Image (cartoon, rainbow, N blue to C red; front, top):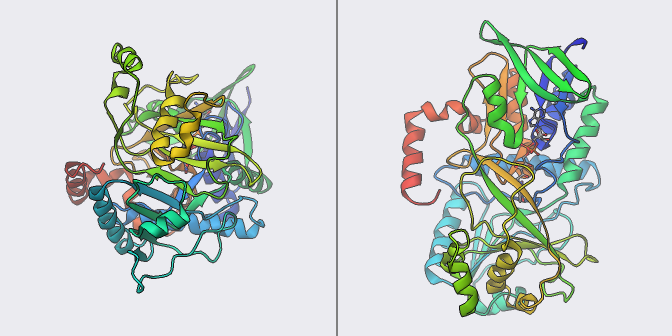
Length: 460
Ligand SMILES: Cc1cc2nc3c(=O)[nH]c(=O)nc-3n(C[C@H](O)[C@H](O)[C@H](O)COP(=O)(O)OP(=O)(O)OC[C@H]3O[C@@H](n4cnc5c(N)ncnc54)[C@H](O)[C@@H]3O)c2cc1C
């Protein structure tokens, strides 16, 4: 029942909360920071991620690319300092298409990404004058090209990616991308934060006290009772419960959630090379079902979409070291705004649908069509804003801050977004892109125009 005092209380010990605690205690030397969570650290969404990163975020402006470049700089710094405890690689993201129209769009996007700071674009058409194409090593991240290789040269595609479908007409290989251990990122920061004095309290934030328009304290429910912590600053880093915690302050955040699932299977026939990059099929597609299965799927409104045109974006990557046989498969074809509920509602046909969609890109996977290796499915919620940009800023309540709407990029972005939140808290200088991740961007007429154009273009 006791009362304690803290400089900052952070609600949530996922990657969002831990990274802010790390920034405050380790980078800014703030004492008496408390992290509160009723669950073990990183155990709700942050350990369900595909753990990939990319600076490939062409948008209507350069804010996301700048943010991700900064975040990847910080991840690389940490990898360097710890002998790559993060197991960071730089295999890249490979977007493949069998559609010439999509290939042209890839070129436009790549030109835009280069102009926005993602790095140089190298186009390969099979001419002698082509730039060199450098193979990505399976491990490590250093001394690799950035930007992208856009490959229209069939021979080069076949030589580097022989497992891709022969209908592939273009491949965009974005290079400042890869994956790393999200668990190591979180634990490294948590260990350093705790050594620098951060306390982790097991419990649930049940109310936040304000008086005179400023934060006064937080009430935490825990096994056997509740306690009050007196504090002038509170950070909402509650992941999928971002809105619930905001409601404690009677403040509505412009966010919603989508369910995202991930399948792991043992690729025991070694169809996908262990050194493959992150692979994404950029084309919409229709799956081939037998007549009786088609009739069965057509009978229910939930499964009927599976017989229509399915969206682009089926993706996969090898999981584990070179000796592992696991692959991760994802295909967000089922996206609606949904209430966040746990345990997660798992879609009945998800593993099979993912496999079929990915077999369009990697035809060797067809071999599993008759007998799918036992799938393991998990996932979580992408809690996001309408334009899929995070919120890392103060609220108009003195002492209240938010670090969330981290959608499908929370691990890769959190190093830079937590830096923003910590700088807001200690009153440090902010980088030029900070405003793009501030809640009051929506009050800016110029940003509204950008958003409306973007939505109108169908690219959101
Ligand atoms: C399938 C999938 C694939 C993904 N792939 C990638 C990827 O490749 N790369 C990438 O960068 N990102 C990826 N992401 C996104 C990334 O996982 C999330 O953005 C990130 O984990 C969000 O972190 P968080 O800390 O905000 O939320 P969480 O990890 O959910 O943490 C929130 C914490 O807040 C706590 N909490 C909530 N309410 C309270 C309360 N009242 N009191 C105390 N504590 C509370 C919860 O218990 C929880 O521990 C993926 C996500 C999914 C679902």
